Length: 323
Image (tube, rainbow, N blue to C red; front, top):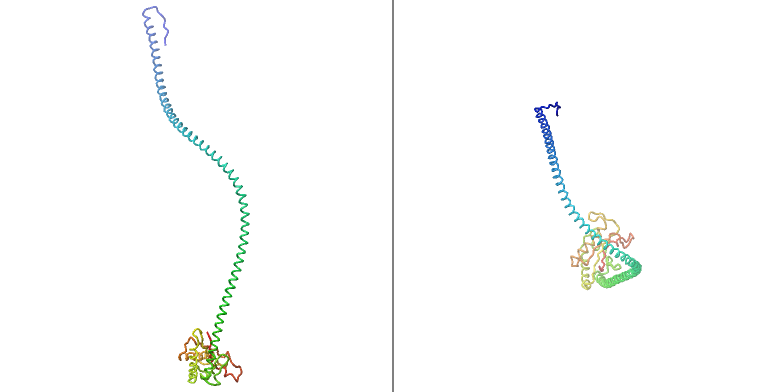
């Protein structure tokens, strides 16, 4: 900065030197001031930066404090929960200990109960066996009782059947008695005729007495004979007790000679038609229809199989019987 000048001993040369020195000092002051100013600016910037950092740190500190408060609160809650859980664990341990004691006691009781159950099972098996024996005895008794009851019912039915048979037999005897009277009276009325006769328990009219050959229409002579029969039947019927259910069977019979006509295709139709014609005439003459039965037998119940006696098979039979 300073240029060396040769010193002169003159007074005039002192001032420039002074000025130079003063300039030098001034420049040094300015340099110091500039340095101070730059340092001041740098310091201000540094302080401002530090203030921002401090503010940021303070904000973080406040956040940390808030988090710390929350953490303390959570810690307290956790501590309370831990305390509660510890108490709960203690209670559970106590309950577990009690349950263990109860379980041991239950095991002992179960052992005793199992022993008792085994004894009961054995007793039950014995009882079941005894019950089965008693049931078998009961079943056998019921079977015997049912068999005896069935036998009693059968005997009762047999007795009832016998009683009915006896009653029927009694009625048959009574009807037989009235039949004898009926036949005797008819015999008396009709006289001794070869074409009217008694065969066993039947009163037999030869068909020719009542019908023309091959016809089921009653002739006048046949109606006359039937009128006498109706008269005798009414007289005898009035004497038969009302409790006896009697009937007069009228059976039509033919010989084995076949008949083929439009009206009667076979002997079945002819014999049946003749029996029905007799019944209808007797009803017309006042005999109650409930006491009459008509049947046709065709040629299948002959009295004779000899060719010379085939005429005997053409007949109308009357039988007083019970229904």
